[in-house]
Amino acid sequence: MEWAITNFIAAFLLPPLNLLLLLGSGLLLMRRRPKIAKALLVAGFVLLWTFSTPFVVQNGMHWLETSSEPVTSLYPDVQAIVVLGGSLYFHAPEYGGKDTVNGITLQRLSYGAKLHRDTGLPLLMTGGAVNKHLPEGVLMQMRMQEDFQVPVRWVEDSAINTFENARFSAQILKKEGIKRIYLVTHAWHMPRAVKAFRHAGFEVIPAPMAFTTRYQTDVFAFMPSAGAMRDAYILTHELIGLGWYRMRMFVS
Image (tube, rainbow, N blue to C red; front, side, top):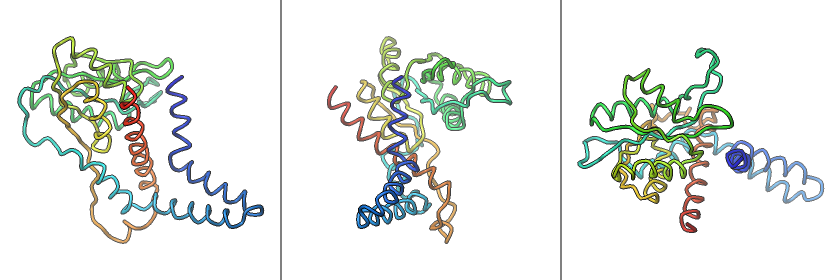
């Protein structure tokens, strides 16, 4: 229920629905409040163009990703690797209609497997269940072991968000005396993830991956695209999430 409520509220705050609501409000007010309506329509158009322009959105993603750097040398005294789930691919036809991990999670598993081979450290997969589906952590373990031939020592299978990933992972790892970890997730997700895991009591070594890069800056970087709108969704989601986590941590 909490997962459904959170995602329902988020839909109204994130593009493209927030922009459609802004433009729709402008259209509805055109007769009764023409000045307000025009302001809303202009704002909606400008934001729609901005959120779909690769150059603008990619620079926003770069700013978000500057809080952590890729792991280029191994750190001493790290005790485990925690890999965060990034959602599922439901009813995958090529897997016989069974659920499996989505592309975002698969990228994280790939880098987690590399980091394990580089360090020999044990792995924890973290991600809970949606409705009656298998928990994400369990499916991550299956893919890691079957596709990458890498063993998984621990599975956290209850969390429905990053904050809970950190809290429930702490319940597992602190019993083992583990406090210093590599944290594997996308570079754009790392700022929020690090805050959550440090709040849970971990000493975190960020191990970000899949940084936002650009082939070249040309005229197409300034032309609206669906790909930029997708990244704008991610950017807005992370910025709102950072603000929400600051409030939540302050209260707790």
